[in-house]
Image (cartoon, rainbow, N blue to C red; front, side, top):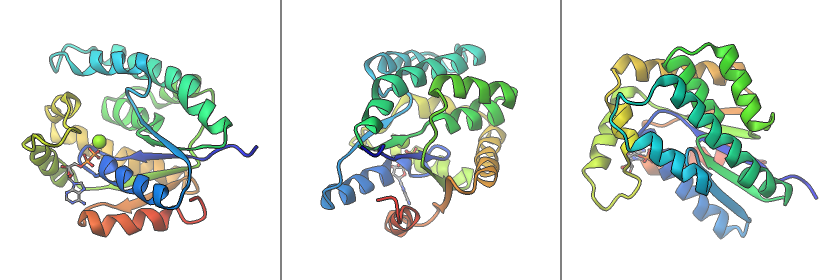
Length: 216
Ligand SMILES: Nc1ncnc2c1ncn2[C@@H]1O[C@H](COP(=O)(O)OP(=O)(O)O)[C@@H](O)[C@H]1O
Ligand SMILES: [Mg+2]
């Protein structure tokens, strides 16, 4: 059986990852393409506990090294318990963030050594790489605006404390993350698709299907 494909969604908070992932789910369902969708952190039962541990604490009480290792632990469980078995069954997997987020946030954002980050990512994933990574590229100010609007929308269950925690980071942190993602995209142009994400939801949606031509 051919291995399923892995598509990951990346970009700063508020860039539209979750919104576009939900739209893609509808398209796949309409085309009768079997898929599963998941996210990091929190794609497994253990991961949900790690997610809660990371998010439900005061903003500055997570040591950066502990944070890095918790994300790695979440990912190791996620790959072994969920992603790899689904791919082995030939199922398409969509993931809202994957190891590139660690490179962008903990590497470029917090300044951990990139060689160390790569080694840790490799250890956690067992070398598994996405077939396609969609990078929703958006300026930081617009991302923040969207997050604030999202927080005010009680009906939006994507609201979570992670946004709050990251929200308190200085603007420069988010700029480093955004530029880090762009740097990764330039390093791996075959895997990455950069999607300009400043347009409306309806403007971005066809860019996603276009970027996935030949994959779905
Ligand atoms: N293209 C867009 N234009 C305007 N608002 C958007 C767009 N995409 C998403 N949003 C809104 O912005 C907020 C953040 O989007 P979301 O998909 O949750 O981002 P992410 O998952 O990348 O953090 C949500 O309230 C969403 O409805
Ligand atoms: Mg999201």
